[in-house]
Image 1 (tube, helix red, strand yellow):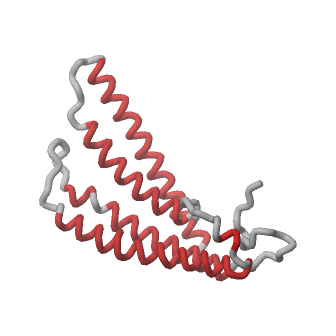
Image 2 (cartoon, rainbow, N blue to C red):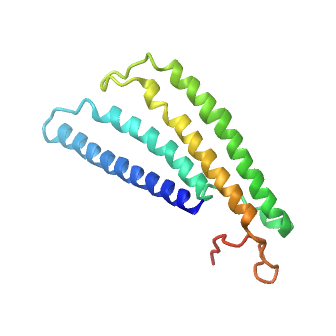
Image 3 (spheres, one colour):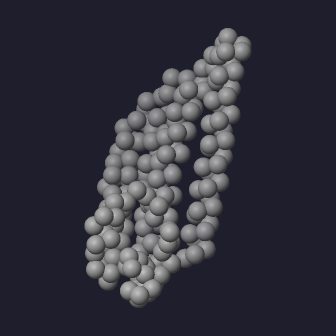
Length: 174
């Protein structure tokens, strides 16, 4: 399981770095072509917009997989320590349901409906742009299943060791 997670993390990290580097270069080219050459680039704005969609949605899966998403822990901090594990499992199940119904099913419908629509400059099918949604949904499911397995394997921490009731392996911040 650790090998799969490590490979998946690394693949998404490389993808994000490549896309982000490409976005910076294209944005620089857009500024140079507009202000230096007085001839604005026609493809750059559209390419940046589509790249941002892919980067954001795939980044969502990556962050959810690392359990680094935004979380309100006000109530979780007040939970009895033995219920924290079950709450974290419930959160992963909600992620899976969200991924199935919104990202995969909804994303597939949006992609199918937009397949005949073509972007004006890049001449790219908009359905292909929206494929980021179902792909991200699949990644979220894979990560959530791995997170649930990790939660089952984790042993609760003794109350004297940790006052907040986290699980072994959870990150501790001072």
